Image (cartoon, rainbow, N blue to C red; front, side, top):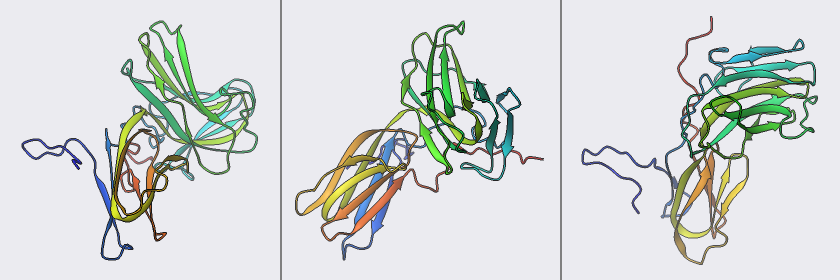
Length: 281
């Protein structure tokens, strides 16, 4: 199986390849290969997405005695997150930044991690709650398209991911917003991401008496299930179009009930979410 492509100078340019040897299959190995093209994680198209540089690149929008603070005690990415204290249900409180030009006709997706108290609700629909919004506008800021990923408060960090969206031909201006909208409460937001939406994920397995192969994302959602494989299966491979914000785990079960797994991208790969920055004085 061709797992990559090289130039004449031997430079690896095509695939990212990971593998794991599983020792529980007697004399034989169980080998799980995972690659993606384009490889994950994708470039984050936002500046200062984890608030490691305070509010740099972000504009603040706060009314009715609401407050916006940088929190160094609880975060998902890096050392910091944004703390929002909103005392009124009207309007929105948060931060925003205008984004660079995106490729028209291409699909993108937004995501973030949130944490909030029980006062925050999104009973008013997709426009309410804590989370993020991406606005697409024409050259005069008149025609628009809005994409939201918002939720009610959660005591534990929760990942929010929007539906994928396509940049229309009339789009000229773009704005990313993170905050609390049309509800009140206290919340943290971190790890905000704007990136291309899809990649092609290929995973293959070699081993003795393979019984089942499944793929899950890091929210525990089942993405693929091979079902029960034919007896004496020793190889399995497939390619899927998957969303880019998630970490994916391949789980392999053999006829003896042994389970093996491998995740991609690996936990040791920080990707593009944490960039070098100066320490806060």
